[in-house]
Amino acid sequence: MRHGSIRHHTSDVFLMLGIVLIGCGCGVYLRHALTSHAYARLRDQASAEQSAAPSVSQDASEEPACGKDWELLRSQSADVAAWLSVEGTSIDLPVMRTSLTDEDFYLSHDFWGSPSLEGVPFLDVRCQPNDVHRLVYGHHLSMGGQFSELQKAYRQAAFDEIGPCHWSTPANGEEVFAPLCAQTADAWAQGIQRFSFGGQDDLRGWLGSIANASSARATRWKALAASATSAITLVTCTSDGSGGAERTLVTFVATSAAPCAHTGTDAIQTVNAQRAGPEGPAAGA
Image (cartoon, rainbow, N blue to C red; front, top):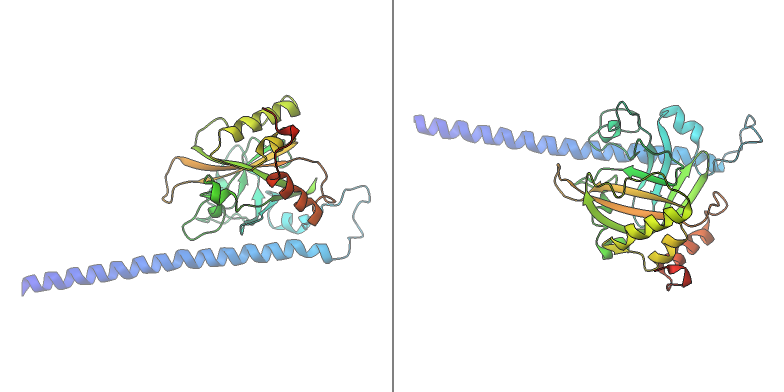
């Protein structure tokens, strides 16, 4: 009788533990769904200004911040720095700036500053949203979202599915960047952590060396690197579990500085042609 009671008690414990774990799992997915819905709503709100009438208070000397309603975004978070979307993925999210006092804040907080397991993409504290090289971090999550779709981009087949990156800021409007290359690296690798250059030749030489060492590259990677004017690198965890030291790095390059007017269908076709066409004389060594 005593042994039977022990077995019955143990079964009850495991049953309760199972219920708790299922509840926790459901809670995680529910929070993920709610977060995804919140970002979709924010995206719709921020894009609504494109069809709205211009503000009568807008300074005529200001350049149009095409693509997003920055006044609305800043009213909800003063830390918003840019808006990022990547074709071929569902990535379409705000990018935050951080401070030296808490540079990893947005690893565990959302756009609105609330605690969040998903976080929100954010700029490396050492760079600005319109710098020559911008390094952006985002989580890879088992349930998807954030930068999860970039996890396997170091494999050529996965990299080939990634389209142009769109980067929107109040100062420069929207710019289009072509996928250059992807690789894996240790979380503390210094090679990609470069933010100042001695001119375009220095930038292009550096990008060429990064692409040359990568496991996945655009067909015309040499030509893209040789004509680049700026770059964005997106960083996420490579491993499925938490705590891994390896990161996936996906680098995109801009080859012309024509914001706003250069973001239509013709621009995207140009970026795709630059990426996939045959190598030309600009390919370099």
